[in-house]
Length: 527
Image (cartoon, rainbow, N blue to C red; front, side, top):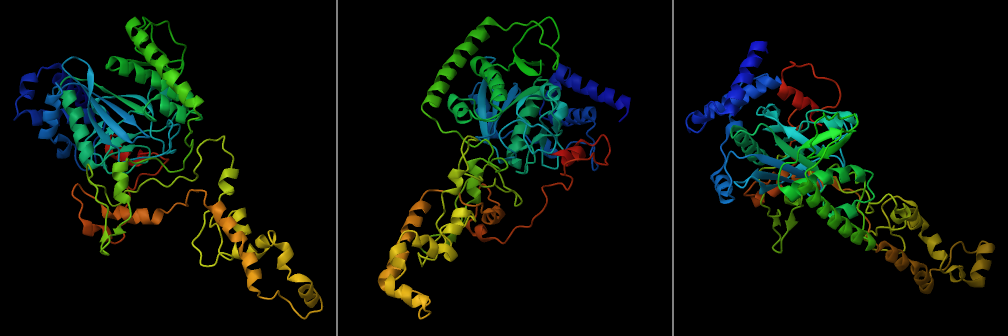
């Protein structure tokens, strides 16, 4: 892209935002053309040419639905007013907030997230599959209308805080396709509406909107549940920004100094992300409101801890999460009373592609690193048995499973009835002289040997996490549920295992593609 092209693109975009073409923007026939030109200018500024076309796709110009426009008006907002996006990993929800006519933000809509990858916690390095957490600024140049994942919004990772702390990675997105490798994935229908809301806010004059990405909703109960996490200090820092927003309903001003976030800070100096913080001040009104909220939250947090609130796993090895709305689509088909195989009826906010997959089952039922592994090995999962004395009491392959396996059942039972299992003095003498090699099959003896079996069953009654059963859920993904699911589709054959949109989703080397290809780079580094 030449320097002249860059200047033309910048001039066009600035003209659109400055209001020079404001009269045309409001004309229904001219507005779509200006939308196309402005987004094309944003692509040129970011060097986002694609291999197939230099103009944005028509899907990026889809208008807001009549229902959404009506909801915006009902909440005393305008279609072009500024937006703010909040992400919550654990709850798998994305919120779009919009400024109303009072000048403060109000919640417009909550979207269930179809898929996010990794664990709770920030992204540290490229290839760790972590979705970012923190505060990010989205400009028009980060909007990608030609994404391989339908539409995409680049989160802007790494930001100043990430770079100051040595974190690496690139092209982390909010996009469609319900497939994530370090991103927040929605359905195509969802991202189309979110993209349109962002587009309209840009045409209304908003130069950038903020994304707040949290591990979970920053409530005292959630903090108590996650109190053993090594990320707690980082999350406490994010909570400060969360509190600033919640008490003011205004977008917090975010800066970085001394390798940490500061919020709504005013200074005559400059903030250096890795340098010492300059002298700054925060509005007394904001400080007082935030302090009151934090003190209230701290008291509730202490109460939850004193009650012994159970902690949740620090590491689950489930590779992210999915909103329950979408998880329901992966439930196994069932047979009703009349013998007809049916699929669970679900109503989805969009189409789940056949290649989408739910998170894995957790590896263990315990969540705190303070828990000892003894809890995992002492509990055996019982198997259905027709012969109590010979059926193993655990399929986990652990030490207790060996003790209660069929080959060791006799030795385990002898510990409870050693005196009687020998068969008496005569039996012992017969075995000594070789007249008898095994005890008589006396019914009472058999009963005594089988007696310990209920004890093993009692131990197995304690719940234990079942080994992951991924195959059925993968098959369930072939259902491809839509907004109006058809019951017969539940019995579809195994879906075609196609890659998640792009073969270039490998971690590592810079792709051999044109430097200006935003979509190609995104397809390659989406982790």
